[in-house]
Amino acid sequence: MATATYPPPPPYYKLYKEYSRDPNSAPAPPPPVQGAYVLYGANYTTDDVLPGLEEQGVRQLYPKGPNIDFKKELRSLNRELQLHFLELADVLVERPSQYARRVEEISLIFKNLHHLLNSLRPHQARATLIHILELQIQRRKQAVEDIKRRREEAQRLLSEALGTLEQ
Amino acid sequence: MDIISQLQEQVNTIAAIAFNTFGSLQRDAPPVQLSPNYPEPPANGNPVEDAANLAEQPKLLSAELVKAAKQFDALVAALPLSEGGEEAQLKRIAELQAENDAVGQELQKQLEAAEKELRQVQELFSQAADNCLNLKKPD
Image (cartoon, rainbow over all chains, first blue to last red; front, top):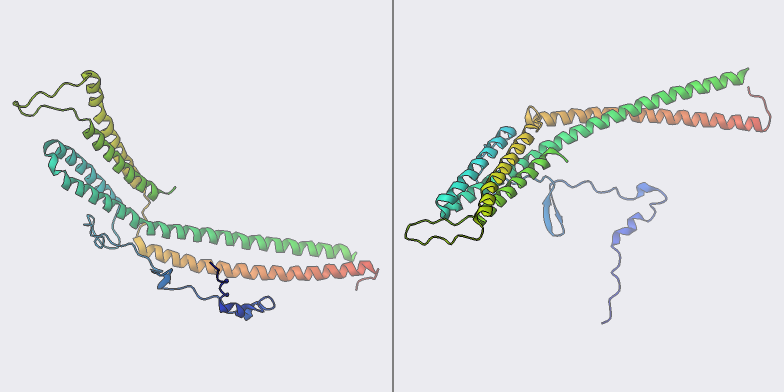
């Protein structure tokens, strides 16, 4: 089976021919994409949002809305979970054939718990971002102080050197 | 390892413990006789060891389950909640961004000034070196 030759390189390598002599003859890198883009045939969007519980067909046990009190909801869900465990235990003793509903509810609570925790991630991300920005600001301020001090030292040394040179 | 991952870990642990608890409790539940006209279930080999084993097993498992739940509450308590929710964070990010740019500008200026002085010092140094080499007095 004879093999075909390698495919030719894509045509836009010609744009970068005299890049080494002056870099800005080449086209600028394309701007970062916003909104929807296609990668390997699949469509992605830059703003990815966490799909709500309803869309996944799971009943939401905690109130909707932008700012909910996570601590309270998590604690209440945890207590409810314990209650359902107890319910499941005594259902299994009295009427073992009705376990299905209890199991459904327990898995429902677990899904809600996980979803609630996942929706805490953006908060954490923003807090991390704030923290990183603060750190950067600190470091840049230190760098500025550092450079100022070194410049004054340099000035002082130069003046002393000139002083010794005169006499 | 951050606290939210710990919380998710704890949820999985609770689920696994619950699953193990119910599984093992069901798995070796001792047979009991339900209605009088049913035969007595045959007594298995060594009743006392199993009974002791069976008696203290649910206590252990349930205690562990409750402990896992308490740890979960402790972790929830340790959650830091930013007051004022999302828009306060976005506002904070915006002002930090502004401050960051300001400090960046100043840093840029300082760097350019330092480089200018560096070039001046180098020229002076080179002139001084030339003078020393061919023995001529400065002005």
